[in-house]
Image (tube, rainbow, N blue to C red; front, side, top):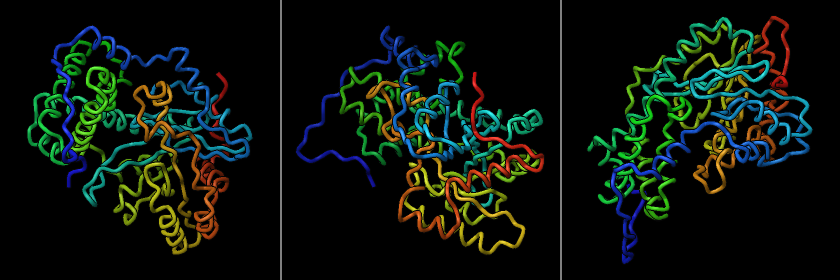
Length: 399
């Protein structure tokens, strides 16, 4: 079913003429979008929290993405957001890139679940000092990280070459007319020329799919708001098609990552279970499931009940499955000015902000499951610390 329609009787807006030639303005836009250094204004936006919770003393944040924002600045933002913080477990989970925040390190990894033939994601968490032994894991992550970069080029090439079958599917799904498709191609041709021209000096952190979105947003003065929005809707669908058709055999299997994590005494959490329903049926060796995040809120109470039943059937001595909630914050969005190309769905997220913990209806299920934020922090940190007697909390040592 088409998700975008032209209202009857309404004339389509005139699409601004545009050529694929790169202008000086395009060069300036590309330089700004691929510059991962932070100016004073961007730093100020990072240091000014979007929310302050003065009474919350326990902070659980094991699913968030620093992107190109320095962790020292993120630490200050978190402390300003939770001035009463006494207990915490704060671990970054960059996509396929291992990062450390004080005593703990983490990553969100893409992998392949052969049982139901689908790409899934895992959150992996470790004691930082054990990362000196993680040679195999780092090699696996380096291979998988290359997928995110190659996907940008595949995404752009799908539009510029073009791949007519993919484009036809995206146009059909979004109700995009030929003029919108042609204009999307023009925008991508500009971007492709700029990427080729600056291939040797583009920062690695800039090679992401959202470069397409941000580039089109930067062209809004020329395109007009309505036209730019239509191009964005079409290109977002193209991206979804590209991601869906990426060869699954490229990825390491879920079981291979879990095996490597356990050899390093790390923890494994399933994020986005609403997107990966079959994984709830798999008997993976994991520490718990994320039952809520900004993208997955519909089945929170049900998922808590599922974990409760799983735990009730476990034998004596078996570790119980823990309830997790993830804010899935992307800190790069915080560096952008308001209405300056941010993704509205991501801009409002904050590290450690998980309102479902305090929802009265959800709270009943949590009580029955014997779960709360403080208890999950204690139990999961104890697992990560292991039998070595190590202890700590997710705090970043002062720079």
